[in-house]
Image (cartoon, rainbow, N blue to C red):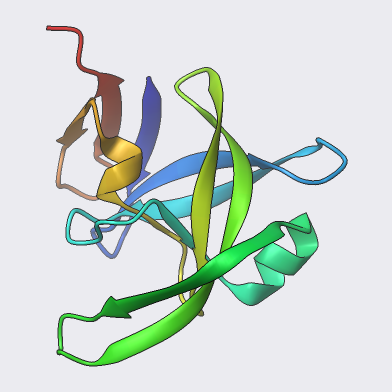
Length: 124
């Protein structure tokens, strides 16, 4: 289970542990964004710090209709006590955790300042 908190700006924040090339773990705080269908975004400086491996180019259409292109990197992350390799999009903004990362999980957000963010595997 992943636990986080709603911050003062009412953004549901979760910690994501990412491993660098030396397999050292780094924690990044990311906003859970249900309108983002990707996995995870990170800014260029964090990608450089982690020395993530470039994978390919990506393209997207934003909510305002504009098109962007970006680099995609591979990252090894700890997710629900498992190590998984995911694509990370390079975006110069606060890190975003998208719905592909949440696939197969239930998201609970207590939308109050300091509220609980809980992401748990759906077990049926």
